[in-house]
Amino acid sequence: ENQWSPLNTEGKKQYDREFLMRLQYDDLSKKKPDDLPKLDIILTQPICNDQSNTSTGMER
Amino acid sequence: MAEGEDRNNEQPEEELAMDPVIKHPLENCWAIWFFKNDKAKDWASNLKRIAAFDTVEDFWALFNHIMPASKLAPGCDYSLFKDGVQPMWEDEKNKNGGRWLINLVKNQRSTELDKFWLETLLCMIGEAFGEYGHQICGATINIRTKGDKLGLWTQNSTDELGIVSIGKTLKERLNMNRSTMGYQAHADTMSKTGSTAKNRYVV
Picture (cartoon, one colour):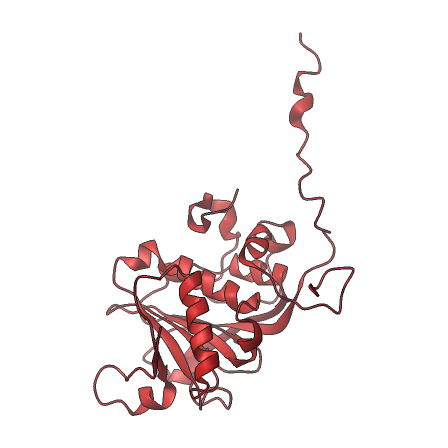
């Protein structure tokens, strides 16, 4: 299958649920994006730090 | 006393397969929007584009730093659209389209809403709709006292084959196999006389 990977950068960028979920707690995924607008819905700490994994079910 | 006792502090190295430097690119660039119902302002100025992203990691970084949909005040919406498409009927990409609509009942806000919304987002960014992915415009979650709504927007309300396939995929991913879901053209929603527009398709 022609899936994108670091070694096949021309491949299709299709990702299944499991793969996407696995990346939720990656260090890069916990870094707050720069330049977010000032809105009261923006959190200072990532969600995954202040809750257990109940809301995302299948994770570790 | 027992020396070497704390040697098992080492972290398990199970993430070796993932290169920490390379982010995983998405097929499309997406933007997240927030709508807050402030009656003192007109509709368009209540709509704010929060940020755009085009990698899996950047999606999570954003998702992890915004309030879950279930915690928003009534009258608020989140939307995720392909970057360049505005989350409104009038947009070029939306005006001939429609949406798969899921009406949630009250208690689903605490039990299912966040799961449904995340699942819909993952379907879109992961390109779960396969060959019909180009039909997808975005998705919106409306938090309302009368009942929350989740809509998956596609661009051509007459493409039955694509729309039905997208609907079936969404239903399956949301595990909604025991209930039905309707697709409504935006044109019908705009001109409706009663409280609900007619369904063009049902899965």
